[in-house]
Amino acid sequence: MFNFSASYWIQLLLFVLPAVLIVLTLHEFGHAYAAYKLGDKTAKEMGRLSLNPLHHIDIYGFLALIFFRFGWGKPVPVNFFALRNLRSGMVIVSLAGPLMNFLTAAALAPIYKIMARSPFMLNNFNYFVILFQYIILYSVYLGVFNLIPIPPLDGSKILYAITKRPQRWLLDDALNNYGVILLVILLVVPVFHFYSILNAIVTPILKLFL
Image 1 (cartoon, helix red, strand yellow):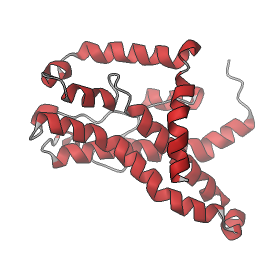
Image 2 (tube, helix red, strand yellow; image 1 turned 60 degrees about the vertical axis):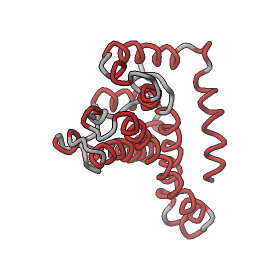
Image 3 (cartoon, rainbow, N blue to C red; image 1 turned 90 degrees about the vertical axis):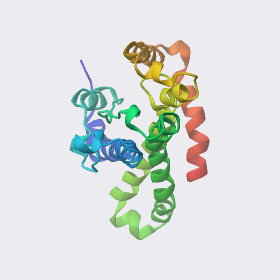
Image 4 (spheres, rainbow, N blue to C red; image 1 turned 180 degrees about the horizontal axis):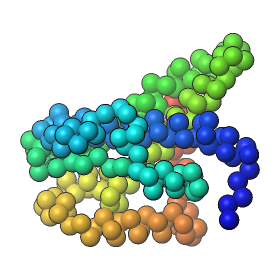
């Protein structure tokens, strides 16, 4: 069913999976840390305030990444009602994941540029040069993607926070189900040109960093 070449598996195992695990782990850690600092201990008590990738892997998202090159991590549990301020807390916690991704890209970009211009690094440590490139790329993509205001993505929580009754939307579980369906439609139906639009946003950000 899946006709993957040897080069695909080499690229996947050596670069894509390690980069995505690092990016997803930092993203979820950002949410957990922000929630903890703002008064919600849920993630900490469930062992999610961690930089261990094993704590953040969703098995179905991991398999989807291998076979479809698009996956997801296990969302950090956040009790927004435990935050000291619901509105500002929702915004800060929701932004913390994408912000962690953008900070990762910003921190690694100058190191990557130095490595990519060094014959010594290219000849002896080329693996790390390429890996850094993948981490920067996926960091920006994940950060931008999660800011889309469709449930259950982070952007939806930011949108909820500026409404008159944010608690109403948080308690509506059906929104997440509808949101997931909408995201799948956007991703798989070519007429929406989702990837073209996403690339149009990501490309200038990557140019800014690199």
